[in-house]
Length: 252
Image (tube, rainbow, N blue to C red; front, side, top):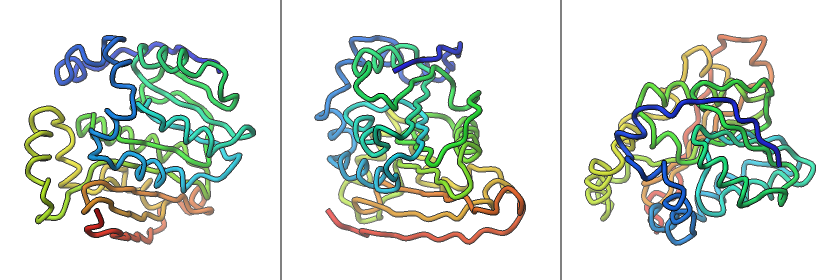
């Protein structure tokens, strides 16, 4: 595993919103466990990982924006395969160092880059770009940049895969508990209740993709897949067909 430590300054909102949580290695190590990941995702963690990796074929190239706690990285690496390509970018140098220490050369296909997902400098394009629970951790202006960058990195015929929170059903028993918790501790989640992920993308760029959405756990979580049209580069501003599949309406 190699790394490219391109300098990237941590944005101010991280300190204001999360304090020392993401600037302390011992804290990051403590959060990197399966129980914590399942608790924060209301025990939907494994289902959301499976939803993401279902879109990835063996030996494809994958770019992931943001490092994820738990075993999500393992599952994506296994889906990409030994002959695939798996690049990960994260702005936090502690996160990059933690992943390097945790995995080292376990997955030959994996490379980790210290870069800001909102200001990507990678020149490659990929079969799949994964954005797993990242948009809910950044403000609206950064959401727009990340979504656009994710789409720009997708090859014709490839996919951008977004996994994140969603506006749950009104009669979901956890709806208002989750809303209050997020308002206190995760203030960037609620905009995803009010706006579809595709609306954060540039209009002309959005039209180069076919969009579909699936929801999970009473619509508490979502998977949005944007598949780039094979003629998208040439057609540019052709209108898109947007398909939304509301799956598992209230399947606990």
